[in-house]
Image (tube, rainbow over all chains, first blue to last red; front, side, top):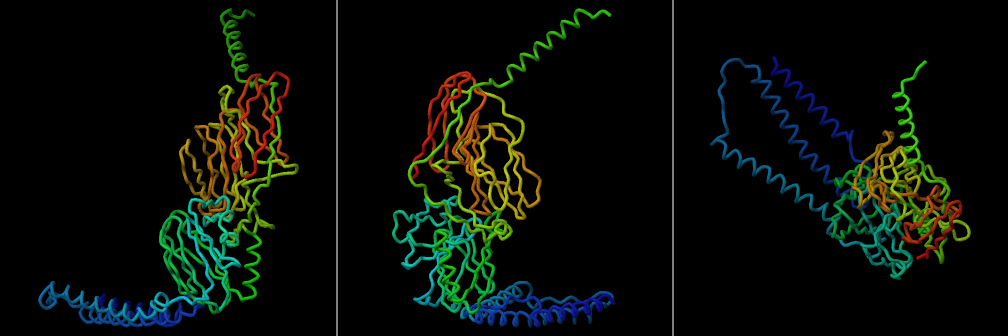
Length: 268
Length: 238
């Protein structure tokens, strides 16, 4: 009896999970990026493949416990033909093929983000991550970012990037903000800097998650297709204030974006 | 009724000891140093602080908060300058009443806080968000502790003189305060630049004025009984 009950419970659990996944009960938020459909398509494919394997595995488990789970007395034990060694080789090969196939198919989606050149007319924004906040820098009317002087970083005086506007002409009109605003439907190129440890830039709606590595400037580009306000979170454990390391992304119409930038420039 | 001679003597002796103790403990009265702190030149403009990362704090400020690296008043007066006796004052025991230091609207209140070595400091968090208090001390031990929203006040003391300890909150990088731990009497310039040190014994003192952006200045001053000494400091705006 217990074997049959177990089999029924396994089937019920499998059906509930499959239902939740197929109907997207807990799914990703709406995608607002141009490259997002590639990523979502890849996730669907991966979930589909993994889901079939999951359902088959559970059904086999249920079938065996239904048929043999309640049999009394001594049972004949069988082992994998040839013993443990071929079993491990078999597992390695099967899992290896699975990983290779997934990476091969997935490289298309990954390459669409990382192996394409950014639009030369992209809106360029510098991002500074530090324990525990993000700051953003716009080049201002001259279109040039002033050089960075890490020794000048002074949070008490709002100098999060280490700018020297008194001596660097290009830094004079740089605009540093605590929130990220971008125009809708325009390609954006972010350059990620970290001033201390590893952090991560994650906007779920943009389908972008990219680590900051101190000492390396990492470019990432995307186009947002929908206006709105979204959360930017750090998804790389970075210290005691990690839970509160966030900022907000505002995707604005071109006119709103121009206004916003003007306001921010006035606040410098 | 006969009072025992020995009891009488004991009473007298105890009284005498108490009087001597009280005299030793009371601060010498009379001498004061007062004055004004001003600046020359044009101070750097204060910068607007964007608190959008922490909406519960941003909501508390009708107009955006600005940096307090240089706070000035009318007639070139300079606020938040700690004026203290750096030499010449006798060692005295610290007052036992605690100094209060609050975190409110993602700002430190007050921005500059002076008190004495071993005087208790009570740190509170009036915000709906968590803060961490990170005094970057070099002569005292450096520490970094979180204080959750609604948490009990934190009591700390400082064992060594240190001018000044920058305090930051790593969760809200714009937050900045300075803790000034001094051994002797001190005063702080108000919005009119005025400061005052009370109850000083007559004598020669070295007076130091400290400002978070403009650094320190030192002067010697002689305090005579019943005659207030006047000292003024002028900092050059960089």
